Length: 361
Ligand code: APR
Ligand code: ZN
Image (cartoon, rainbow, N blue to C red; front, top):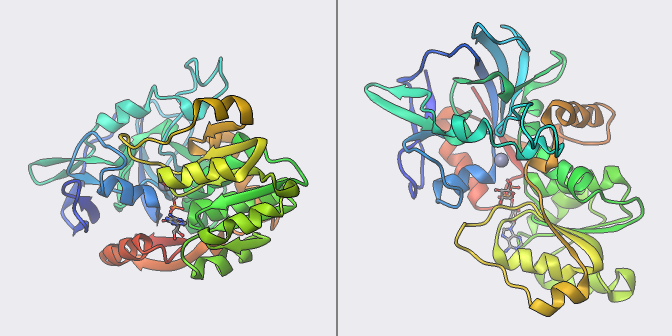
């Protein structure tokens, strides 16, 4: 089958091959025919080493949806023909994070195990996969906890986006920060994740939603997804001066993944406000805070992992919001590509030109 393979970290392009095979599924596994996969910035972050993975070469991709082709003997929640969204961080359903803490997004019981797997093969060589899923392939094999069944009436291209960017951004606003009605919000980065955070803030009833992006073309895009204002980074101070008598925003969402914008997001919120870091930076990078300001400002600085979601509940919630017209997910797709052209898509995302591109398999 066809798949897009990252040979090694640092490569600027993927190798699109047509001779990749899948390992035999185990008793708890599900084989999924991937029909659509989005290209997310985290894919680029694996290519450039920001997000470390266990094995290379690997099949990239983690934002996908498709149709179940086959199930192992012990699988009970899905069967062949079911439409599913792939979950890049599957909750095991039985650990202390899933049950006692009620934070299934933080369950690592299965994630690290699946990341160690090499479920693809290319001749004699075994291939790993991004997060143990590898959706830049016509077919993948994952544990049953890594798929969520959806209604067949739902478009699979839209469903793919819910598998990462949409859930991450909408969930950051609704689950992690719990944006309050009437509040003021600033979102750094108008890519797929940032646009989803803006839409989540709108659903939550925010009165002001200001987008910040260094690409002027993205400012109009942000407005079309619910931003009430959109500014270049150099114009942020003027926008901040209008919020809470100049004190700043009630909430900031960093959807870029750089230390400078994480710090800028913290600075953009008022005392007692919430700075929610959604973007993923490099492990060795640091963000600094004065030891005094943490006490004095009493700001909430919180990370958001997979939108704080219980995917088994929240994927459906997001899809209902889309169906009722409160989230525009189809409108986020600005380009469709065959797998052969995936490197063009990667270049466009690198340049900050697109919200979400869909690879059709
Ligand atoms: N200042 C302002 N805007 C910036 C800056 C900056 N320093 N750097 C990048 N941007 C803008 C880009 O112009 C682009 O519009 O941020 C946006 C990022 O969008 P995408 O590349 O589409 O990224 P996305 O897929 O939305 O992911 C954002 O969330 O899940 C994480 O790993 C992901 O860290 C990444 C982040
Ligand atoms: Zn992603």
